[in-house]
Amino acid sequence: MAIVTELPPGVDNENLDMSRLVEEAAARNAIPTPAITAPGVALPPAIAGVKNTTTEEFLKAMNKMPLFMTELDESNEDGTGENSELEALKALAYEGEPHEVAQNFRNQGNDCYRARAWRDAVEYYTKALAVKCGVAEIEEACYVNRAAANLELSISPPPPAPLITDSKSALQLNPHNTKAWYRSARALLALDKLPESLQCIDNGLSTSPTNQPLISLQEQALSRQSHLSALETARQQRVQRQLAIEKTLAAALATRNITLRRTPHPPDMEDVQAHLEDPLDPASELYFPAMFLYPLQGQSDFVKAFAVSSEVGAQLGVVLADFPEWDHEKSYSPPGKVEVFVETRTGGLVRVGKKATLGSVLGNGGKVEVVDGLVKFLIVPKGEVGTFLEDWKRRMGK
Image (cartoon, rainbow, N blue to C red; front, top):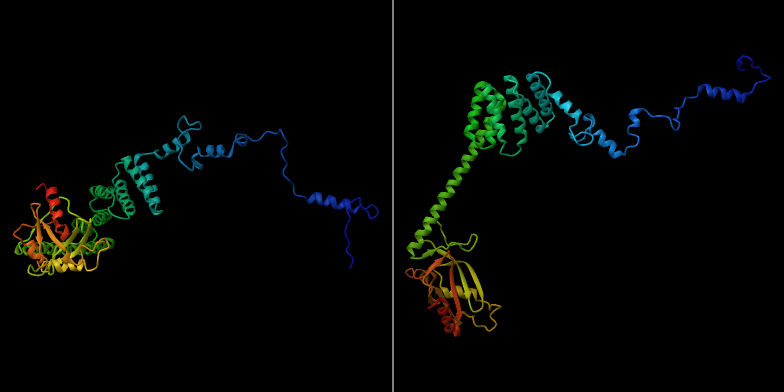
């Protein structure tokens, strides 16, 4: 099948130049390309002003414009005065009647509150109140909402003081403001001021008896009150028991004629102390922590609980059952090789028999006293007792 194409006027088959026709068609359908500015041609003024600036200079200049600011810069371009554009924007925020300015700040605070930007919300409500527009409805709302924002900021107690102050200010404007009663009660609950919190809840419920947030808060406050009451009861019981234990111990010491004396700086023995086997029975076994001191060797042994009914020699036998590493001459073991002494309240020494019980040593008519709850024995080899006693008397000035 033949296709007949009409040729352009003036063109016949004899003088047809196919390559020229293709070039003309391409030229007619070509997409125009932007003209390239030739060297020397002037740029638009706005572009020419920044053509020769560095990137840092350009960004610094842009930061002077309020729309493009990434940080607050209140100085002008050369840093010698105020940023006039920024000051103009600030002034716009205070244009209009006082109630209009306050309402504008209130609205911005509400926007921030909905966006959970609590600190910004507090700032806007503060600005609204600073206007002092005199419109109770605006000021009341700003006090209540600022208290709400501060309440959100107080993740852990205590809540900020302005929270309670703002709620109080709102209630002075409107005693029936349920939100203000709720936020006051919640803040007081966080401070464990339960009677005050419950009173605020009651006041709020008197205005709105079915207010669910207040009812839920009341349940929390009553639960917390019950919990604290149980803790206080347990604390008082512990205090009373400790007083009874101390009283019983004092009675046990008095019965056994044992004297205690405390110094201004007693040693730290943690939980080790004189105690009764049954802390509430003065006739039960009495125990003391004790130190066996070896002054000629600069060594010691510690016994956490030495029963007053036990013999000194028996306890010493337990301590020296194995030869101490420091006893190179085997002068201390077995216990028969040593003499035992205790210091008297006047600085003298009393020789202690191995068969003597701890109770008989301490209950010696007050001659020996237990200092800071710790009994101390001095252990000396028999062959060195004379030298030791002479040295003791010299040191004590006797």
